Amino acid sequence: MSQAASVLIVDDDRPAREMLAEYLATQGYRVLQAEDGVAMRAELEREPPDVVLLDIRLPGEDGLTLARFLRERYDVGIIMVTGVGGVVDRIVGLEVGADDYVAKPYDPRELLARLKSVMRRMQAKPAAGVPAGEAARRVRFGSCQLDLAAHQLFDAGGQEIPITSMEFDLLKVFAENPGKALSRDRILTLTHDREWEPFDRSIDIRIARLRRKIEPDSERPQVIRTVRNVGYMFIPAPG
Image (cartoon, rainbow, N blue to C red; front, side, top):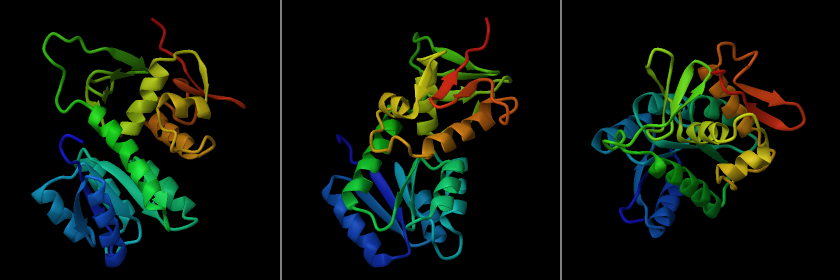
């Protein structure tokens, strides 16, 4: 990394937090720490990090509440840290906009791999706008439009719809493969996220979340359709 990326660890387990902080520092990251939501907000006011590692089980405000707060106000990567078997927590975390999750107890190398994956997506997103003279390529998803150059999604009225970096990657894959049935494994390959498992339900959760943003009726999707026993297919708007 030419400039050290910053990571904010939010965890009330001080020994575990400091051990992880020390490990990430040896990997070239600039590490910030917070033990709860109050301390997290204080760190954010001083300097928003690139990625937040957010434990779900925190005193006071829990991690899911804080993840929603982060997604609504900051352009940061979010990795949720859940307990063993915390399937519901993972699903809710992804639904509120987390980019990824890791379960405790985790191997620091696994967390590092997921952190690098989120960082790649964050770094691929332009910091501001599109250079003058560069035409922004837009793809229609129902009544919405995806700006591939600016990494932004807009509704029919031109208002931006917030999306995570992973949601952008999924939309980009569909935009580049219109009318093709894509398996979950193929989607993993095209998004360069081999840290996921091929049958990880997080893909389904993210697509369900996208449908709520782009489909007129997310219960009867017409833009991103389910192909039974295969995966998903993007159906471009006519004309």
